[in-house]
Image (tube, rainbow, N blue to C red; front, side, top):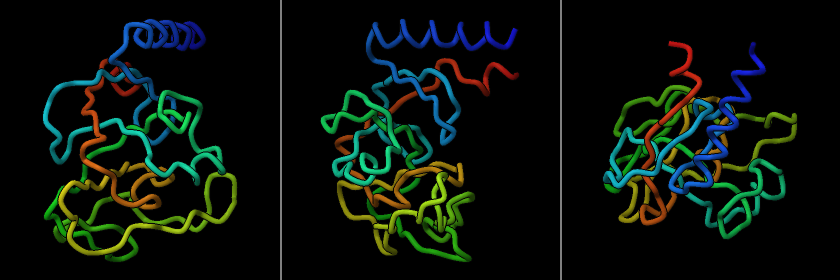
Amino acid sequence: MNILKYLFVFVIAFFCLLLGGYRVNLTRSMPPGVYHISREPVERGRLAAFCLKDADTALARMYLAEGSCSSGLQPLLKEVVGLPGDVIGFRDGLITVNGQIIAGTALLKTDSRGRPAPVSRLTDGIIPPGKALMLSRYPGSFDSRYFGLVALEGLSPIRPVFTRNQQER
């Protein structure tokens, strides 16, 4: 029965990709499922898809599968946690935004394969114009903790269409 459920999700995901305007996530950093690119504004707390401008680390470590980005890798899906003017800090090993601790954002010493984790490019301070802090609450996520802030102009807001969390309800 479980195999049929996964086959159903795969078939839906395949057709959504053919139609365009959809993203499929099969990683643990966000709920696995199908997401639709929306025309909503980029706001704190929303999800967004984006391509890494500097994808060398992701490519060398095989953190991302092949995809539609100019790097040849798949887009990432993360939550918009910080926007221009917000203050990034660190407390008790976790990232803070405007003084609020963001759960699940500790920098790891090793990645999922036991290799030393990438050196963090994230620094404390005010998020400059045109940039955003993109994170996942999944502790092992490859996100702004490691590659730093991303360009706002490259973000495509997304909404979940069908995710594993929705199936379990």
